Image (tube, rainbow, N blue to C red; front, top):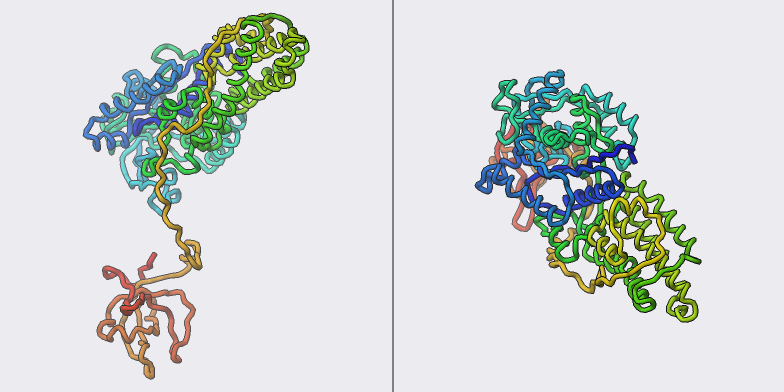
Length: 628
């Protein structure tokens, strides 16, 4: 953990093109858990979240709904804020890129980068993806038209633009990555970013004139038709949110938490912008994976998108938080299924945590009227085992290993449950009540520690545990977590995690999967393209003697001379029908002999019970035009 006493943690600001889904909730809950842990450690902590509201995609979405971009952004931004409020997310500020102070801050940053010589005017021609708000080169496109990130069709645009000298920062970025190996977490993502930068950085177009919904350039430039590139606008929110309240002493950020799809913008563009602004770089950019549902990619058309509010309404916020943070290691993709969630609730939360607390409440009431005091006795070594595990937990949090943090806590709970089974207090209460007291002192101290430790992950449940144990969750409780209490008064509380016997959420209606095609002789696309098909014009047609089926054709394929092709189409076409018509020809066949005549290609045709038809272009094309 860094020695600084101020910790700044951010989520991305979420794009207001749709309502919040499980990915948004995952990012925000991770950030909230880390921020709560930071506060528990006694650090002054600032958690930022918010919404990204500019760009062509928002402008187009608003137009489809007959709203202004601001009206549309207001509506969607509110759904995010309301959801985080309802989920108890302890953010310190909710920023919107339509906030006036943010727009002014972005303009100042643009001016400074311009004055530093890092911004210049030019023109840009490229393939633009409206959905991703990004340009791509021809070689990056799928099938020469589709965005490599989202698969949607790109638009070729050419417009006047201001550029940021990203190429200037190629070496400084590579040097920084080398000197700060944990800048990108998990470290497995680091190599991807380095490889991208080593492949060469091109200057970045950072203004647009093809739409209007965005932050205008500074008045000093005299460019009223230009708006700022949405990613320059959006990334600067991490700084403008601090400037407005004079909180710049929180900078640099300890942790930017993002999804892996926007890692490049945060790990390359953002540090370069900060270098240009002469600001320190953040300590960590942490990129998590994506979520599927029941093994399938989530899609609105399929109807299997996980709605966070629906899950929380059915199972409670703490169960949802625990599932997300425990189910998958940070950085890897995760799969949400209601069955897996129920298994976690009944197993980890009910049988391990809830059961141990219930046993303590029940035994303390039955044997000692809920009040007892004594020494640890034979359980002193077991508490030392517990405390040795607790000593390692802090390291997991800021390295984004929350699943490991929870795994170790559940190993602590297992120690407690085993101790009860091995001690058999129900058999010893009459013969050795002091040992039973020692057992309950041990279990109470163990659960007191766990109540504090799970408070960043499951805040509501930890408060209930603390109520049962007469404990206060606070930085002092964390600071003094290894202190041993020798007397307890246990308060009865309802079961924390009642057993779930059947699913509570509305079942996703599975659409029937299309019947799998049985394909014979399947080839790859590369193999198919080994066949060269060209459009040709039939110049001459001659019947082959002694054959009722064959014609000898002279076909122009735009080569040095016409090709001679022998084709079995005489029964279906007259010489007049064929002469000067166009046909499709397999042009790279090895020449063969038919009826003693050399055939230098094959005309394409389809034949069924109704006869044969030549495959022809819909409209006349230049001879030699390839078919693809």
